[in-house]
Amino acid sequence: MQPDYPEDRGSESSVEFRDAVSGESGNGCHSPGVNDQSSPIESIPGEALTSVKSDTDSSRTAKAGKSTESMPGEASTSGKSDTDSSHTAKAGKSTKNHGSISHFASKLFDETIPLKKKLKLLRRLATVKHDGTVQFDVPGDVKPSTLDFGTGVVYNGSTHEETLSEEIEDLRPLQIVMLIVGTRGDVQPFVAIGQRLQEHGHRVRLATHSNFKEFVLTAGLEFFPLGGDPKVLAGYMVKNKGFLPSGPSEIPIQRSQIKEIIFSLYPACKDPDPETNIEFNADAIIANPPAYGHTHVAEALNIPLHIFFTMPWTPTSEFPHPLSRVKQPVGYRLSYQIVDAMIWLGIRDMINDFRKKRLRLRPVTYLRGPYMSPPNLPYGYIWSPHLVPKPKDWGPKIDVVGFCFLDLASSYEPPESLVKWLKKDEKQKPIYIGFGSLPVQKPEKMTEIIVKALEITHQRGIINKGWGGLGNLETPKEFVYSLDNCPHDWLFPQCSAVVHHGGAGTTAAGLKAACPTTVVPFFGDQPFWGERVHARGVGPAPIPVDEFSLEKLVSAIHFMLDPKVKKSAEELARAMENEDGVTGAVRAFYKHFPQRNLTSDCQPLPNKSSTRKSSALSMRRCFGCS
Image (cartoon, rainbow, N blue to C red; front, top):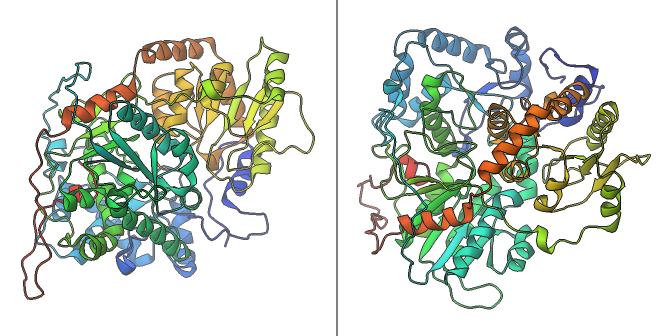
C-alpha cells in the first residue's frame, strides 16, 4: 500500500528522503512499522492503547485522507473509518459550541462514568497523528479556567519565586536508587547527579538498561539492570514517531518492553548487588517518568520519590505537552491531561498486574480519585532556565535545575586522524551532523544529502555514524570526516554549528559550546527542543526527519552561519556559563527530602470477599505525573 504523503513543499530530494526514512521504495512496498495517516483512539486490546487499523480500514479512508492532507504535525483526520469519521465530524462540530470541549474533558475525569464511555470520549476529543503526537483543537472562546480539572494548581498566573542557591542542610547517608529508562542521553545526566550524591557520602545505585552497564560502572556508581533494550525502544519510537504503536505487529514489542521495565523496578530497589552480593535497601528513589512503575514501588516501600526529567511533564499554560500538537494556548494545560490519560490507558493493565502480583497493593482504577497533583511529589527539570524559564504556574515543589553535564572530555583520547583533520584548516571550523543512538532506515540516502549540502555551502563537516550508520562514503571526501562516538563536550567547542536530532542532552551540549543549532526531530520531545532553539534565535525552524531534504539542509546551514545567529548563540552560552545543573539537582533533592519518614497511604490487597476500593492514588500519581 502506497502511503498518502502530503504535497511536497521542498525539492525532489525531500520526496526521495521521505522514502528513505520510511523504508519505502518506488515499487510500492510498505514498511509495516510506519504510520502513514492520523488515526483516532481506537481500542484497547488487552488494555493496550492502540491507534491502529487494518489495511482494509486504511484503504477505506484513503479518500478521506486526501481531503485532509497536511504536513506532519498539523491536524488531520485521515486514517479513520467512515463511521469514525462521521463521529469525529460531529465531535468537531460540537466543539465549536461554547464550552463543549470542557464538557467532554470533564466527563473524561468523572469517576462515575464507565471506562468504555471514557474511551469513546477520548476518541472524540483527540486524534493520534502519524508522528505519534496527540492532536486536538480548542474553540477560541473557551476560557482556560474551564479546561483545568483538579490538577492541583489554580489558574491565576501566580508566580512562585524560590531559589536553589541557598545552602541546604546535609542529609544522613542514604541508599539511593535511580530508576532511569531511555537512551544514553537520558542516562548521562543521572550519572553526573549520582556521582555528586556519592561525593556527599550517599550510596548510589543507578538502575538502567544492561547496555549502559560499563558506562555506569566506569563512572564509579553501582549498577543494577532494568528490563528493556534501548535499541529496540529507539527503533520502535523512530518507526512509530512516538509512544503509540502504528500497527498490530508493533503492540507486542512495545508492551513486552514496558512490562520488562516495570517488573524490574522492585528488585532494583531491594535486591543485593548482582556482582558483590552486598545487600541494598533503598531509602529514596530518583526516577524519570518513562519508568512508569516508580510511584507504585515508592508507595509499597513507603520511601520518598523525586522525579527528574529532561522534558516538561507538569501541566502549564505556557506551552503544550511535548507529545501533543495543540496550537491554541488555551488548550496547553489540557494537553498534559489528555496525553497522561492516553499513556495510562495503554499501561494500566500492566501496572495493576504489577501492583497485585509483585507489590501486593490494591489495583488502581482508571482516573481514580480527585485527579490532583500529589502534594509530596517533587519534580526537577533538567534544562537551562535561560532556554526555558520556569513557568509562572508551577509551584514550589517544581524546580528547573539547569542542564546536567558529565565531564567526558578530560579523559578522552581523540583519534590521531581526527586531530590532524581538524588542524588541517583551523580557520574554518566544521559543522557537526549526527543523530546519536537513533536508527535511520536508509543511512546511505541521508549521507548523500548531507555531503551534497556541505559541498554546496563550502563547509567542512563531521558526520557521527552513531547507531544510524551514517557517513559510509563510497568515495572519501577531504571536507568530510566520519566519526564514531566522541564526547560532545570535547567535540562541539571545535565546531562552528551542529545539526542533530534534538535530544535534550545533545541540545544542551551544543548550546553550551555556543554552536548555532539545527534540530532534525525524529519523535517525542525532540520537536519541542527544536522549537525552543528556534524561538531563542540560535537556530532555524526544526526540520522533521521525514521532511529532511537537500534544499532544507542547505537553507539551515546558511541560517546557522549568519553572524547574528552566532552572536545569539554566544550570548546564550555566556548566560548558561555559571549554571551548575548537577548542584541544582542535588540541592533540589535535599530541599524536598522529608526530614522524617512519610506516612504511607498504601493498603494491602483486600480479601476476595471484600469489595472496597482504594482511592489513595490519583491517576497522576500512579505513573509519576504532577
